[in-house]
Length: 144
Ligand SMILES: [Zn+2]
Image (tube, rainbow, N blue to C red; front, side):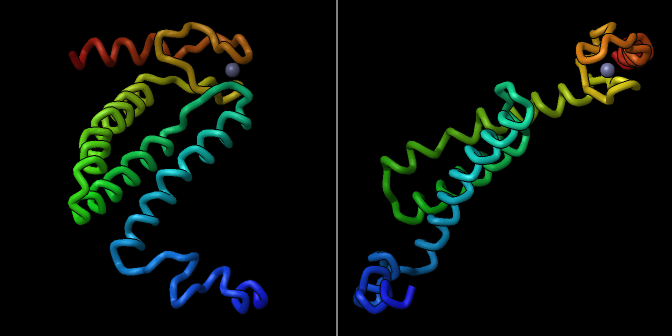
């Protein structure tokens, strides 16, 4: 790293990586980093489950990243950037809400602890009868 610094490739006239740093620049890059990290989270979850999944963390990172980028864009008064971020949080919030709702409608298999939608009669993983299904339905029908 020393030779890089010495050659001026990293520090150029007081600029780190050629970028002039100030508070909002840091905010913008933090937003970028959070926004980018969601892809890593989603990729990891997909690899682990060996099917395409979008974990809840993906939407939280999207929401947080886009709000930080929006605040940066507003501060910069860049209309293109503001327009790009102004409404993107709406689908993120919507997806988080759907995730939350789905979770409350799930039953956990007593044998393999896999989560299934509450209308499933049998576990898709091990085929065990999901006894909680009828209980939950009666609770839900009483509640509505
Ligand atoms: Zn099971």
